[in-house]
Image 1 (tube, rainbow, N blue to C red):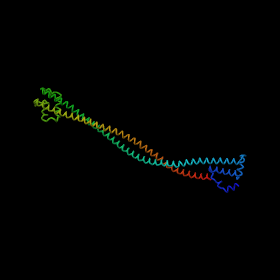
Image 2: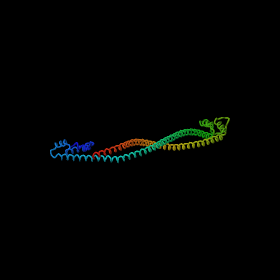
Image 3: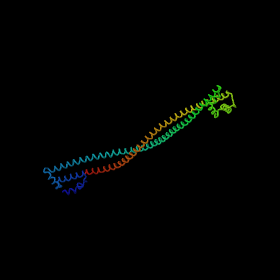
Image 4: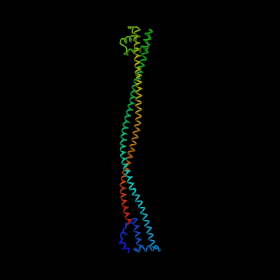
Length: 331
């Protein structure tokens, strides 16, 4: 009877009822019904068809067997594909993790190097700014000194012109015997002031000259003596003026040379400042990008490591489940 068969084959009724196991169970029940061990099921099938009910059941069993086989093959293909990913995907993942570790190390080194270069560029930038400011200050100071020297020379030149003109008039007047008329002129006043303040005239000559210029009746020197004194003073004035003019010309040349050199220094410093500013900016952007890259790579590395751990766990779990399903199908 059906009860005796079930006792002799308990596994036939105790299979796990997964999708394939359930199909197998149904096949076995139908087989028992077809062989007469389960009259109730057989009667049900007989009621469904009046022509060759056993063949009907056999065909149905064959169709179910084909379906189970087909589903098993599909499941096997999916399992093989998953395990292929477990095998090769894990290797690719480890390669990605290794590459990320290497990249993080390299990025750290690159950031440190770029930061050092940026610090040096900033230091150079400050020095170039100091150099440019020093050049500008030197030019300003030199220009201030030159302006004072030029003003002093201009004043001396004007005084020399007036004094020389007065002496030349006095000499001409004396040579023409017109000393009395000269003493009434403005040139005589200029000559008198010059004699009083000049350090280039000896005390005796100064006294003689001042007595002449005052028109004192107590002193009536020979005109030739006065003329000689004036000519000597005029020659000394011209010599002094020549020296002052040469000094002024030398100062002008030195100032021009200094300005040219300092202008070049300023321009070079300005160019260097532009270069260093650009360098500092480029390094700053590069460092920021590398830091962002470092952060992104670190996050990706952590995600890959976590995924790798989960993948191994999932692959082991899937392999265990597949072995259980294979065992179920084999029963």
